[in-house]
Length: 198
Ligand code: GDP
Image (cartoon, rainbow, N blue to C red):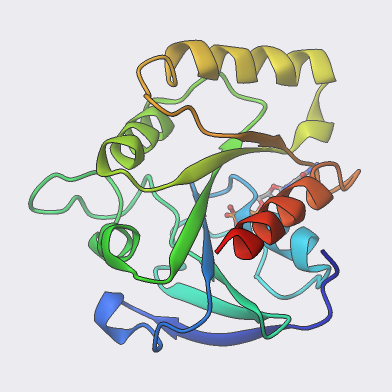
């Protein structure tokens, strides 16, 4: 997929404030500092589109970007620091849970995982919640350039064993790097395929 236009559209604090659901949406989420802003900039080819921040937890809004006037890229607030919902649904914010469970135009969600780390409890809990809630998702292992591909593959394999073993439909897995641009076309191709399948 070529990115011809990529523009910030709007922000919303919760599901009811989200823009009218029209175009297919593809959401991105992960722990703070996992490289989500960097990945969004890599995918869209726009360096400053999502802010690469040094302040974890600052962005608590759902951000919508209009891509090619064809689909919306949705930047969800990171998890791992937000208030726990009353229902203890998960350790991420209620707006995110509402959006993931109820947004009609949401097609697919990409859950970002830091490829340098062995499986983290918070990612495990989030992925398990996604699977149980029946929200379609893939995993994107970020920052692959930071270590050897052997090390990345070993962390991916650990994640499969320790986290995905109990998941009925195992998610697709992508490996990305903002430095080498590895994985960019794979993720964009996946989005394109899902748009065409609709
Ligand atoms: P966010 O909080 O999830 O949006 O994370 P950021 O996009 O702000 O990234 C956190 C830090 O990781 C920043 O210093 C980025 O430059 C760095 N980073 C993110 N992705 C990559 C990558 O693929 N390779 C390398 N080497 N650094 C990355």
